[in-house]
Length: 174
Ligand code: FES
Picture 1 (cartoon, rainbow, N blue to C red):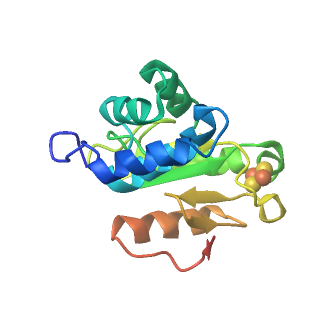
Picture 2 (cartoon, rainbow, N blue to C red):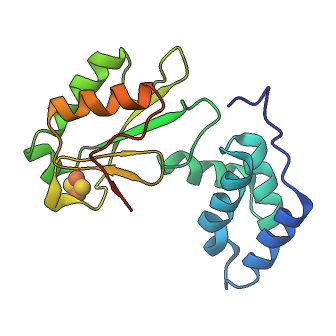
């Protein structure tokens, strides 16, 4: 999805919902992450225009909102591919071979950390702990699919299935 094809203007009711949410917090920035998720759900991603509207609804400076979006790698951007593949790079996963998983994926997809394949299908990102340390190494696809105890063969199968828009078999949904 791109800014050229997507309407990035939030609905009036969404703006009102964000403003109402803000009133439930002593400081407006307490509502920011939830407000951004609401906006992301509606538009499909966060870009500067979406940030400006969220900032207006909350009463914060747009630059501050964009700074928060930039800090969190899990907000979808308008330049992201259909499947964002997050590879955990925190120590327990690193000790169990996550670097090898990441390098394998980078080589297979022909992209580096943060990049998107030319066909717009995959974005690859290193991530901090994905909360599944006991089944390291693991990766996450988009917001709700976990793949754990990875081998390189499993990684190949996951990418092949996603490339065909099939839900890969070995996964745990959060
Ligand atoms: S360290 Fe990888 S999931 Fe926690």
